[in-house]
Amino acid sequence: MSISVPYCLPLIDEAVVAEMNDTLLNTGWLTSGPKVKAFEEELATFCGVEKVLAVNSWNSGTQLMLRWFGIKPGDEVIIPAYTYSATALAAINLGAKVIMVDVGDDFNIDIEKIAAAITPKTKAIIPVDIGGLPCDYFELEKLVTMHQHLFMPTHPNQEALGRILILSDAAHSIGATYNGKRSGALTDVSVFSFHSVKNITTGEGGAVCLNLPAPFDNQEVYKFLKHFHLYGQTKSALDKTKAGKWRYDIVSPGMKANMNDICASVGLSQLRRYEKELLPHRQQLFTRYQDGLSAYDWAYRPTLKTADKISSAHLYMLRFRSVTEDQRDAIIDYLTENKVGTSVHYIPMATFTYFKSIGYDIADYPNTYKNYAQEITLPLYNTLSEEKVDYVIDQTIKAYKTVTKKIIA
Ligand SMILES: Cc1ncc(COP(=O)(O)O)c(C=O)c1O
Image (cartoon, rainbow, N blue to C red; front, side, top):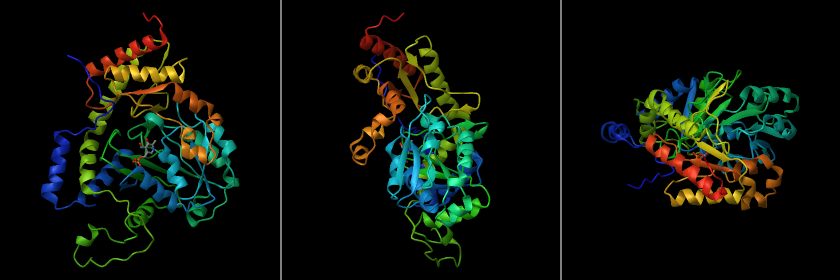
């Protein structure tokens, strides 16, 4: 029997269908209602933060928070050069200038290189927990504190924070830990994505985790965002169901970024099984790849754990030492021919037409290019069997051998 391994499949099983059926048949809600409320509350408990706002994508959650912080044209936002373009575009769409910083060997932004990128125009840093491995938030916060004297606030929330905002792009890292704390609680603000390839999915969706320091009151910030993410309306449809509560006001020029109850029910079903079942299972499959490739020096395997971090095992980002970009591409072709789906995380933004047209040059980010040129991402998801992981390992070894013509024991 021939084996075929798709790159990714979302988890849609009986439990997900049961939760969706409950929403559709028993609640009378389609838009933001009781399931969104439950999803926000259970996520906040899981992450260990006071408040979580469910939104319709990572992008809208991030734009919401950048707008809350008063990001405007002329401001600078620092991001890693190695990430999905969404990280850059959220800031660019608000008129900010994105300053890209090269990454390290672990794929994450090189904290030491951030110092040289900070100017009086820097308003936010968006580190990305690539593949699910948290960034060094302790070092990052130290760096931001050291540069506090350069910060020039131009908005009341910037005055109140008194320093650069650290907004974590936690699109990959739900469930990951750093010094025992979960992603979501690692810095000022973190934004998850629940796009269909993510560890927990709502089809499309995201969530903003609020962990702002004093003098901010996260409950109050949540209240503001709750209005702002729904056209600046003071009452949601759920609030208006209470007697005498039909009258509402519009208090800000808000966005339309709310999650709906159908999406939230898919996410709820997965979240409730995430800690005990889905996350350990992903980590187990990740470890199976690690063990199966451990005998090969050419296989530069991604990190699952360090002394202070545990990854959410979102992506199995394998690099091939000493291969060229063309050889990497040929390895992908071999795997495709043998029915193994793969992906590349990431084609560097500085190689795309748009980013080149506004002045970015891949020559400025040598580690980003090197990571990209030698990387392929292997299939990793909850419905993947161990037999299929073994097949992928076997095919990957054969692909490397065929492409590089090396004899492998
Ligand atoms: C690192 C990273 N940031 C942001 C996003 C954007 O997420 P969304 O599609 O939910 O806006 C993604 C999505 O793939 C991502 O991988």
